[in-house]
Length: 63
Image (tube, rainbow, N blue to C red):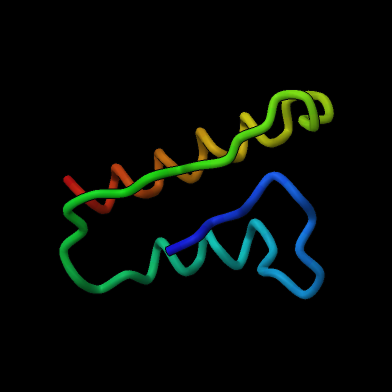
């Protein structure tokens, strides 16, 4: 599952939509990656905080 990329994607999923998708995964998760974090384009660390939130949601599903 691609969560986001370092460039804007018109018509892409919102952060909330992706978190809802993660929370509704109904099968075992055995691995995950969060890729293409670009600190040069991260306004007020919003992307870093979102990446941490998504990883927390993924890890909670893996436990």
